[in-house]
Image (cartoon, rainbow, N blue to C red; front, side, top):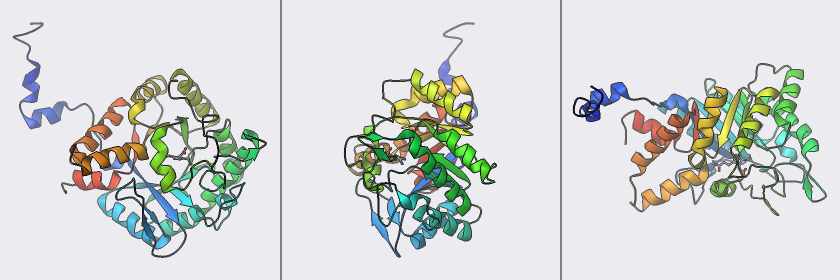
Length: 327
Ligand code: PBG
């Protein structure tokens, strides 16, 4: 009995209950992290044109939004900040009164159970929009490390549960680990954006976070899309430097990288279902060219199937609603 007609693969597909029993990949709202954009002011809820249902939020609105997410079962958020003013060194990023730090404190006060992850990168805070500080015509890797470390400590002081360095500076994970340990935050995990590609899929995010580079691009520090072995080296180095969770970003066009990373390292693995991936689905769904709900769930399932343990996604709230049986 090695083949047809004794073997019929369709037998397992006839009953929805059977399909569920044999289902190999599952995801639930517990695997999702909801990214949020925070800005100064009161009662601000400004739309981000390419990202329907995602807003720049002032602290009061942020609390409402995080409360709604919590009610739906979303247990983790990732914070990005838009500062009052930008300068060459991204000063607000590492001031106690900086927008991310304020947001962490506000969430921790209103919803202490919510897991708060903070982005550690200067691009939203620098006037030139690069992820590090500039010397001559270059991003100065080593000088940037000091500022990223300061930023992470500042966020930890404000109450961040996990810090997530995304600047793609060499040595950033080690620099953060050393600084956090020195300041008594040895229990604060680092979620490292290890394999972060220089991607066109970040376009809508840069509108949302007002963080587009004012000259040049990020190809000098973010990874080149064709490279996968290099991604393995990046991940390996981050693990050696003390990363607790590693990440591949973007997700959908990099499922092979996710699969390779999970297989090679068996390490806690995050995938970032980025802004451009979200915008494409939303735009096509609004045109009724695709079934947005079906495709969103299919994409998130694929990201999990490729090996991601957790997914950072702008779809978090709607997916939670769907999984809870809502529309
Ligand atoms: C850098 C950062 C970026 C994203 C997350 N962190 C943008 C970039 O590298 O230009 C993009 C996320 C997305 O597109 O959703 N701080």
